[in-house]
Image (cartoon, rainbow, N blue to C red; front, side, top):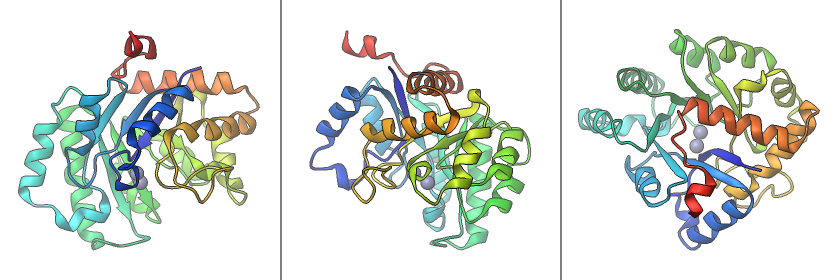
Length: 259
Ligand SMILES: [Zn+2]
Ligand SMILES: [Zn+2]
């Protein structure tokens, strides 16, 4: 069985003490590929991706950090977008829950990065929290990409799917109160489903409250299989195939990694 964790923050300081062991556990659990999200310092995910053949990177400015951008940030993003292991621009979007950056600045920085992604021909990884209507309005034309940590209802799922997005489900799918999210996961076409952990955040049951890690993506996969009335193997095959199609087989196969 091969799984993909489409959203990891392995550069987070919470992994500084045991990053190698965390990666080993992921491989042992069947995780064949991980997408490292590069926020904060733009290059941190690329460094991980250069080191490990089964990690691909994204680059982007998180909405939390929108007010820290300068013209140089966007020039750097344009340059880095050409790096062979940069799979996508992300995570980018809007976060009106924390409002760490003013909303008009968040929108301007989001728009700028959507333009950079379009120029570079790269998919986008979207973060949207308590900002659904504005996010959808800004995404307008059809897009290749992921709504990461999808926690919306079936109607919101349909809106994102109509724009061409894949929906990535994570730990929230396993939370007791997340019936609407599970219903959204049930109605999503099988060729638009992805798995993620968003580690170190949002650990799925039965690890809830602990530091999350990529090996736990199997718990999300198991729950998704239950929700959709299929087997774990089927979910693994569907979501891995979807990831490989979306990112043009950027990830090496496990066999190649070991060889
Ligand atoms: Zn996010
Ligand atoms: Zn994230």
